[in-house]
Image (cartoon, rainbow, N blue to C red; front, top):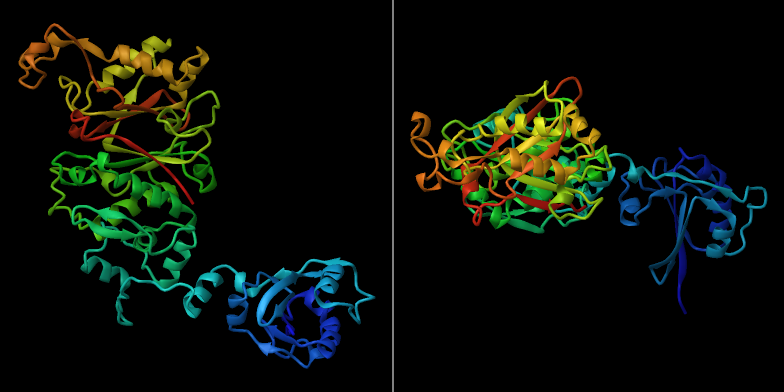
Length: 477
């Protein structure tokens, strides 16, 4: 015959638990009930007290989220449970109840102490639900963990957040992916990167757990062979990864696509890009002055990450234009340099504005080099409004810029205008495009106040379009 018993979880600091105390006392006289108290083992007095669960081990092992909770066990295996107080549900579980006639039909319970902020991660670490694989680094009591990070070469030159077990556990709670899942091999050393290692570096970068799915998507994008992260790391050029994020996730985590979107001040923008750079450094061994041979570099190699402004439903977001499903969240990675401002206050038509923007874009890499690098045009609200007012959509802007970015080959060939730099003289009779197809990205961002857009130049590796490509990666939870 099956053996049926019950366990109940309560806490004194819960009005509903106090209300049902007499019911539990009567129930304990009729059936086998083990009661656990999360905050005071002398409660409920009507049952003679409870087993001490102030350490919350039993609450964690039984996945308690609400108190009171009553669980029915059949031969020591859970078969049913009820949370809070609902008389019909308790009677379904336990049979007729004495001391319940004066109680209301329903009363919601209270949150379990095991679900308080930070507690699930603490309990998981304490009771074996999460076993971190990374080697722990012991820091002596009087040592500064941030100074230790500097001395051991774990930082990009800025202070990091010490990645304690609890902080890493909280970061891992931001995704449904297993800590031991392998994301890929990080160049240049091709060291295996797990979700846990990514979490450690996300903590060091200052990310919140809700940013972590974006960090994972960005890392996956950087590891796609066509992005050529190894080549980007080794180049003498200025470039590093530029991250553009689209979709609902940008609003959910509070990314900046408005004023100062390319600058400081937004935690998500700043730390997501930095997390990628720290993974490349700490997991892959990409150290400046060693494998990273950039002649000058650029400040974006600390972090360069922002969101696109998607406030106008008539504008096709960048990720959708690149093949992502509408409404999805994605990260697009571009091999980018610094920011070149483009002032264009006098243009009055879309065509005139295209010519003005194109004149500045021709300066990317070198004014006489075509097809050598890509670019991002960050279109400010005033410039976008000029296009929008005339009914121009993304495809119209792209077409207008393509036309404006064509120049006679005779002006660009090596030696023309007394400048040795230039394209092959055999192309003197052609009309030449500045950028290879697909290597000019148009992104809406910025604050209002002036006709000031921006060009972000690209890596000279873009001339090898078969080998080096811009990538867009879906962000998953």
